[in-house]
Image (tube, rainbow, N blue to C red; front, side, top):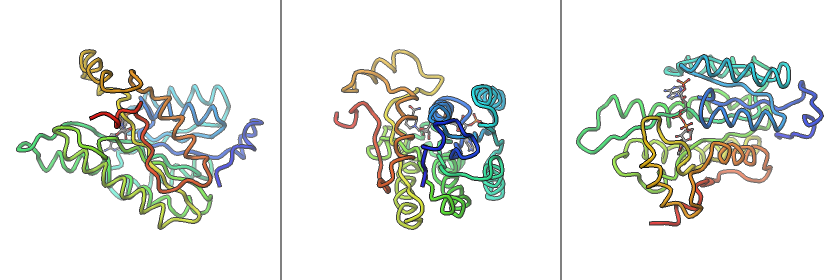
Length: 254
Ligand SMILES: NC(=O)c1ccc[n+]([C@@H]2O[C@H](COP(=O)([O-])OP(=O)(O)OC[C@H]3O[C@@H](n4cnc5c(N)ncnc54)[C@H](OP(=O)(O)O)[C@@H]3O)[C@@H](O)[C@H]2O)c1
C-alpha cells in the first residue's frame, strides 16, 4: 500500500518510489516535482531529454539527498522496456507507483495514415505502457503499489484528424481497467484524462485562445493540475479502474 506517513519526517529510506516514463520535461517533470515534494523518491525515465533529466534529478537531490535518479532508454523493444524496469527498481530497491506518461501526439488525417505513424502512436501510447506494466507487475504486487496511465479526454470523444492517437489512448483506457481487474487486490490501476494542458511546442497563442473559449473554467490546465490528480490517485486506497478527466469541465461542452 502506498503510504506517505513515514516520509513526511524526511526519512528517505522508507519513502515510496514513483517511476515516471517520459518524465524529464513538461507534465512528467512537474509530476516528478509534486511527488517529490509529497515525500516520494523519484525515478525519471527519459529517452532523448538528457540535459532536462539530469538538471531535474540534481535539483531534487539538492533539496533532499539521494531522493531522485534517472534511467535513459529508447523503450523501443521489449528488452529495452524490461531493462528500464529493472534499472528503475535497482535505483532505490523498489518501485511503488508506475506512471505511464511518455507519449507521442500528432495528427493522422484519413487518407494520410501511414504504417510508420500508426506504429509510433500505438507504440508510445499503448504498447509501451502494456509491456511496462507487465515488466513491473511483480514488483508492484510485492509493494502493493499503483499504476497511473496518462490518457486523454480525446480517448473518450475524438479529436478531429487524430484517429490513430485517439484509438491508442482509448486502448490505454481498456488496458487500465484490465490491469485494475487482473492485478488486484495487490495493485490499483487508474488513468487521468487531461484536457488542454500544454500545447505541442509548435502551436501558437491563437489556438490557445480558441481552446480556452471551449473550457468552462476558462483557462488551460497546468501540469500541476495533472500532477496533483496523479498524487491523489497514487495514494487513494479504495479507487481502482477509474478514468479521471482533469479538463476544466471541457467534456461538458459540445
Ligand atoms: N499536454 C497536454 O495538454 C495533454 C493533453 C492530453 C493528454 N496528455 C497526456 O499527458 C501525458 C504528458 O503530456 P506531455 O504533453 O507532457 O507529453 P509529451 O511532452 O508529448 O511527451 C512526454 C515525453 O514522452 C517521451 N516519449 C515520447 N515518445 C516516446 C517513446 N516512443 N519512447 C519513450 N519515450 C517517449 C519523450 O521523452 P524525451 O523528451 O526524453 O525523448 C517526451 O518528452 C502524455 O501521455 C499525453 O498524451 C497531455
